[in-house]
Each structure stands twice: as structure tokens, then as C-alpha cells.
Image (cartoon, helix red, strand yellow):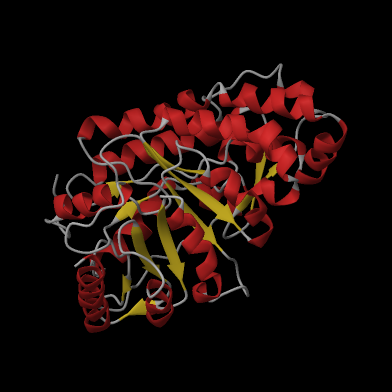
Length: 360
């Protein structure tokens, strides 16, 4: 498959497929932001409410296409449109409503206990999910040959329960009635394939590889498994109530990388690394906890367990500092910041030389 700005997309896909297998073709994948060729002038539009702004599908594409017109794609970066309504869209399938700000949304908890969740049947025809469907379909039609359409941000398992109960209440449930948390988590996970494939089946027939809110690639079903809620609970609670559902999600997918969010979640890293079904880890150390070089020991643990790494780092120097301690196989560089084309291409050359030197 080709797109206008990346006629070499097949080569990019090959690098990612090698990354999943902890192998190297020519160099590790590099996702890097390059300054646009010209100043981007985004269209402006006034909406009565934030909700109206989020639901304005045409406006979302007008802004995206304005940015795409002058975008520069270097390395393994490619244009992708992500249908979105915020991170708690899956909660709406089980009955909660969303509130919106300019940049995000959050759920309005809707159930009095985890046991109530067992009686809820999913509704994919609600206004929120219908908007995601519509945006996906419009993106596939409008972006044919121009960009890839991403799977939306699906916070499932324990995060889905937190959207229905509120995180604080779910913490109390874990302390008072862990069996109900386990049962509710298993219940919503029964419908994970339904939610995933409802969107993926609108994308896959085109032949495009799978990408997500994280700009990875895979030829089949892939996703970023996650549960941000686990930073609030013990390892025992995690392993008994939520991990079984995460494992079911991993087994449904062909490839997955776990989004481990914040220092509070590190207590669960060894549990995750022991899973044969886990392909890799995206470690997010969080604002004020960087640079990535501070967490070299974490990356080494991940790599020692035979998993691949999405290396989120503060800048190019930070990426190189971490790389000194790692093998190139299974490392995907994602430096923060925006760079000139010359800086980006110099980093690509360094990554290729680093990989060649380490694997020689």
C-alpha cells in the first residue's frame, strides 16, 4: 500500500514488523516530528459548546488536511487520522455520558457498584460511538491514498470500570469486594472483540496496516493494551482482578504493546514482563520525571525480558544516552520535540550507524 507522502510505506511497515520480532532490517524505527515546510494556517470556527466542537466531523478534517498540506514526513513517521472523543469512549458503550473541555473529555460515572455493571449490555449505537464510526468511515474515504486511519483510543478493562464507577469508588471496590471487580472486568472484556472489530472491520478491507493513537504499524490486529488505573492498586489486586482481562485482550490481538503510565505503575512491570503474550512496553515516566536516561534500568529490564520498547525520550540527546545501554533489536525511537529536516536525517544516520555497530 502507498500513500502520497510516503511511497515507501511498505519499507516502514517492514521496519515495524522487524521491531515487533526484536530484529533489525537496516535500522530501528524512528518516529520524529519535522518542522512543516510552511507555516500552517488552521481554519477557525466558533462552536456554541465544546461538545459541538468535538462532534463537528467536517471541521476535524478541515484542520487535519490544513496541517497535512505542509507536513514533512521523515524516518518512519507517516500521516494518520485518529477518530477521537477522548480516552473514555468505551464507557459510553456501557451507558455513561461524557463532558468536554477544549482538549479532552471525561466520563460521568453512572453505576452504583461493580455488580450493577454485570447487568449492562453494550450499546454501540449510542451518539458517541456512532461519531467514532462516522469519523472512521469518512477518514477511509477521504484519506484513500493520502493518509492512514488509526484505531481510536480504547480504554478498556479496569479503566472502563473506572469510567463507570469513578476511580476513587473503584479503589474502594477493590478493597471491599475484589470479586465484584474481577467479575465486572471479565464482563466488559467479553465485549472487547466486539468494540475493537466494529472499528477495525471498517479499516481492514482497504488493505492498510493497523495503526493506533500510538503511531505503530502491523499488518493485522494490533493495539496498545493498557490500564492507567493500576497505579492506584496493589500487585495482588491487579493480578487477581484486572490482569486476567488484559491477558484476554492480548490473546485476541496479533501484536500488542503495553502502555505503562507513571512511576506508580512500575510495581506491576515484572508481572507484565512475565506474560508470553506481551510483545512490548511503552514506558511513560510522566511530566517532571524525565529524562528517559533517568530510567535506563527500566528499559534494560524490559529488554532483558525479551520485549520490544517504544522509547519515549525528551530529545535526540536523551535518546542517544539511553541507547548506549541497549541493544538495537526491538528499540523504537520516539524523541519529543520538533526538528529541522537536517537534524532529523542526521539522527536517522546515527540510528543506522548505532545499529550496525551494535549488531556487527
